[in-house]
Length: 380
Image 1 (tube, rainbow, N blue to C red):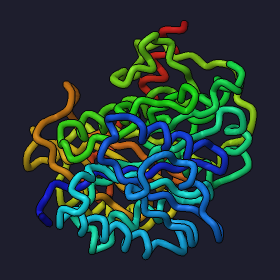
Image 2: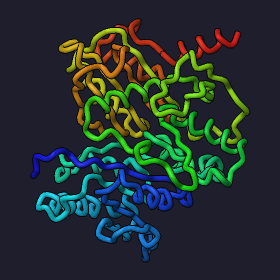
Image 3: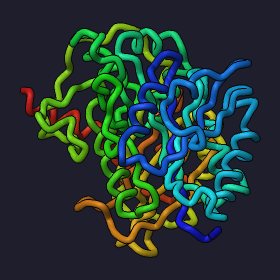
Image 4: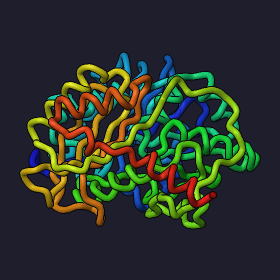
């Protein structure tokens, strides 16, 4: 069964006390997650979190001798390899998804690196990305005090605000703005007493069409003006795409600092690209600036087949295997790239793109600037 469809895998993270275990508990009770196997990582001599999750013990592989992102990375590969082998033999035939809950101090990057580059896992897992839990009451203070928490938010596809019943409307608004400044491309959801529908959290698996739609939505969200709140009543709907017609506005100021210099840069390129040249540039950029490149994702129009875009994504030095999509996910064509970075100026990416990917500098556009201008014109 080694040629079977890759097993979807999601990493659940969040700082200490963010409510990850409660969230996992509520998720695993939902019929949509039947067949899910959870790997709970704990730090310390005695693991307790797994005792708080109410489900059958055989669904868990507890890593209790350290943090996944450092001392037990080899154990993670071993655990996953054993799970896949038992699934191949039919012993775990019902397993259809894996969830990894990291410790609160975990850096998700080494976890993702391990999942993507370990030879034993090659082609066996469809890594859907990161879900990050953030405490509504203490989240803003945590982001201002702990770089690990900022990185967890910056790497997320989806962010779940927990403990919303304990926070005031003003606290929630400030936290939403802060999350949008760190990662404007992430979908932000609010847990209702620890509950979020699994369908709103889980990724796209290995469906190329769904992957393309997710990438297009990620780009559209990233080009909304940083720190602005969408006034559209449908803004929280999963399919909503931000744009100048939404009426973005800047609400009350956010308390706290600048979150370790994290910025989002979005690019639109109005010319088809050479596949070898683009690959060369992307490898150069990740090699040179990978440590500061928290996330990147894009849909690329290549000159060898302009009707089938290339989905690219990466985390720091690690690039996911590119996926050639069967068609464009929406009516918009042309290359769209989003980078979430720490300390990389936009012009550095732009200059290297022009030089190493053979792109005409005039063809490189800043969609965020266009959206901001349109929002300003509407407000005038």
